[in-house]
Every structure is written in C-alpha cells, then in structure tokens.
Length: 197
Image 1 (cartoon, rainbow, N blue to C red):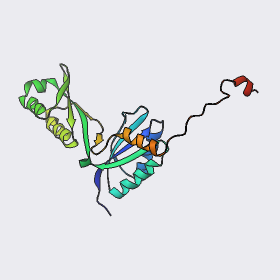
Image 2 (cartoon, one colour):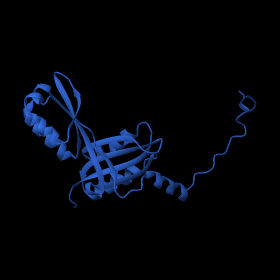
Image 3 (tube, rainbow, N blue to C red):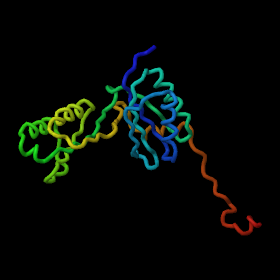
Image 4 (cartoon, rainbow, N blue to C red):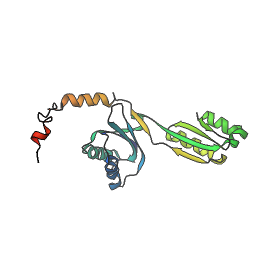
C-alpha cells in the first residue's frame, strides 16, 4: 500500500451545469476529504478548469482521475505533486487599525510577509497575502495575538510546469479524431411545408 501524499488534480471540462456535483460525489463516495477546490475559466472559451487538492495514495489518485475522465463533459484530468506545479493561494486578514498604528511589530511583520493593505478604515484594515499554505498560516498565527477580526483564504490555483497549455492538447485531440463536418439541414427554411400537424 502506497503512502499518502498531497496531490493537485487538474480537470479540463466543458462548462456544464451539475458537473461539479457529479465530480464531488466521486470523492465523497470514497470518503476522500477535499482540501481545496477551485473552478475557473481557462484560456479557451467554454472550457473550465477544476483544481482539486487532496492527500491520498498515487494509486487511488490514478483511479479517480480515470473515473472522472469517463464523464462526457470532461476533456482531460491530470494529477501532479507539488514540485510539478506552480501554485499559490490568496488570503485576506482583517485586523484593528489601532493595533497597526500603535504596534510597530505588526507593521514590520506584515512587511516581512509581503502583505499589502487593500482596505484601510478607522476601525479595521484588510491585508492581502499571496503565497503557499505555510506562508499564509505563518502570518495567520502571527496576527492572532493582535486581535485578528476575520480571516479568509482562497482555494489553490495551479499551473503545471511541464505543460504547453490545454489549447495545444485540444488541437492535438482534434488532429487525431477530427469532428465531422456540420451538415446543413436542407429543409430548415421550409418549416411550414415539411412540419405540418
């Protein structure tokens, strides 16, 4: 039995209603906890990209990717380890403005972590931080003693390092199995003559 490891699954799909539900059921049936889930458009119009982070064995990941690819709307599913992708998460931290003004240590800490202010009000300031999971957690723990009001983090966004993009792959699929030419219906402009009731 293989050891569990963090994997990022990237799925390219047609943009269809209900697909997210069907994909998530595949994980819940196997009792797999999804650490992070992001769905976004791609560089190709009408194609969506699912980025799912789970901790499992490679054998199970391979099986679930094959099962996902059986869905009609799914074009391709890949899985990668963290060293095979470029990835980031985004986090927002809301802290009392008075703490930042009074304590130089908080301001220095925010600068060291590369956090930027996105909203400054009299009662609170919202900071944005982009980085890996550990970097976001580090700032979260550091701000906790200073009266952190609210915290939210995004799902992972990732790009596969050794990939020419899905557009190139789509062209390759089309060259291997070209779609049939669209045949125009010769009776289309004769509605009333052809379709009588």
